[in-house]
Image 1: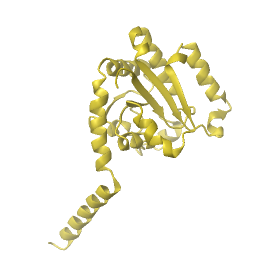
Image 2: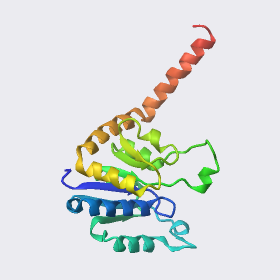
Image 3: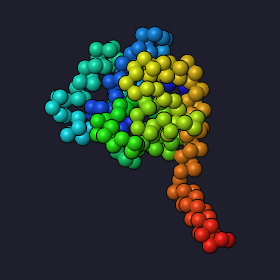
Image 4: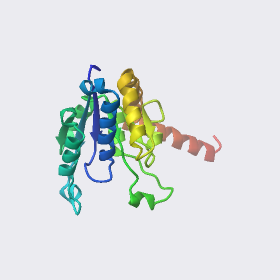
Length: 210
């Protein structure tokens, strides 16, 4: 049901993932459209490896919880930490849209034109769910087929606007899900193998003039 729009952040929970931006954007959404507080929920799900969640900056999870309390979001946030692999598909499909507010890491920035994507986005497609994502890495290409929306990384106002658009037009989530499901179906290993086979056959035929 779309009576309650269920958003999902899925991935490792540590600094640099832009989770703080997502929390601020959600608070801005509720400030600009108070009626949405009863209609939008966010789940933070994923892994919390000790060396990532506990660093020189202190306990990151506690910092997130403090930010949530400060923003008045405690009643709108659910947690699902250290998710078992077997529970990932069910968890993703229990939500309407994945939100990935990543910021480009310094490490990836040093790679120049080499651009990576996201395992979480692959999971979204495989499970038939659309995504709102920042334009970090190659994420824009991943949601360029009618399966989601993008915003400039670090731009909290732009992310909040995307969330508001979705909350006001929840059927977008259904349209994105249908397109994501088609993408996920096309990416199954048997279909991928057939495409490679056709490509190699074509290459061999070209070389031999057949």
